[in-house]
Image 1 (tube, rainbow, N blue to C red):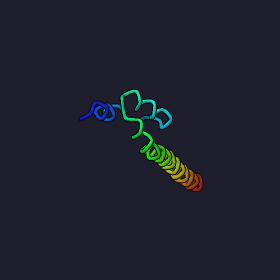
Image 2 (cartoon, rainbow, N blue to C red):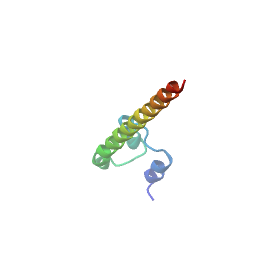
Image 3 (cartoon, one colour):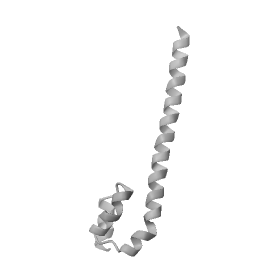
Image 4 (cartoon, helix red, strand yellow):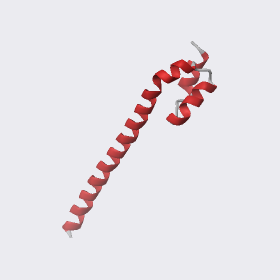
Length: 73
């Protein structure tokens, strides 16, 4: 196992804009970084979109529950 593989398992990439620098610091080959950076950005945007979607769903459910609660009295 290469040293950077262990580092990647221990320290997950937190933000896409800092990921490239983190990978360079731990010795990851630069030519491979450019190959999978689009996947890192895609995963980041999918994560943000899913969080926003779940937040909207929760807000809709809470709004509906509060409306039904107010109509009882």
